[in-house]
Image 1: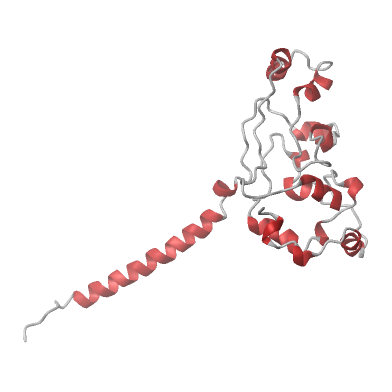
Image 2 (image 1 turned 135 degrees about the vertical axis):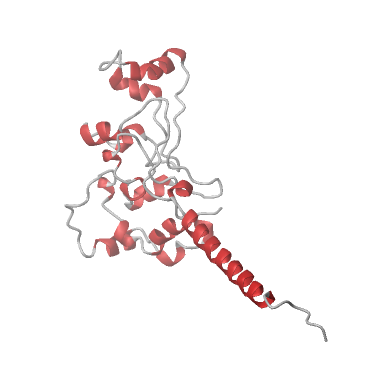
Length: 218
């Protein structure tokens, strides 16, 4: 009976199988790396704004409270972006002719709002309520990072489902006194060992219910 396969057929078959396995492994590694890359999460990426507003100067240097510009954060699902008149409260008196503030002056003169670009943006299918988190004592820095150290604002956390669930599964360590939620530096804060438990009891927070799908997907 004549030979069907050549002598090298077995070698070629083994080589092809090894290549398929290698491609599969490399694809998995690439996908895992891409899912955690800053390209996908936008962590550390600066978004171009109509005015290069420096949180480092205004928050870290001047000590402005987050709620001065994000006025509805305690009462609404949205934190709100500052209106032109908020900027002009100060800049009608100081740096009145600064070229960098020309878009702000034009916005006021033309009665057209500045179009700020959101840095902390969630997908449309995710529901997030700022007021609920603030009222429970979740500080701004937990999600937005040390904005007082950012000359230009960039996303500090990935805002992935895993990021949210990590906090929802064990919210206690992330809670702080409600009257200090806008505080940036917590390094010198001496926490009461029972503080987290007290906070959970005071607000009736049940971590086992915070991971239900409807909490974030409504």
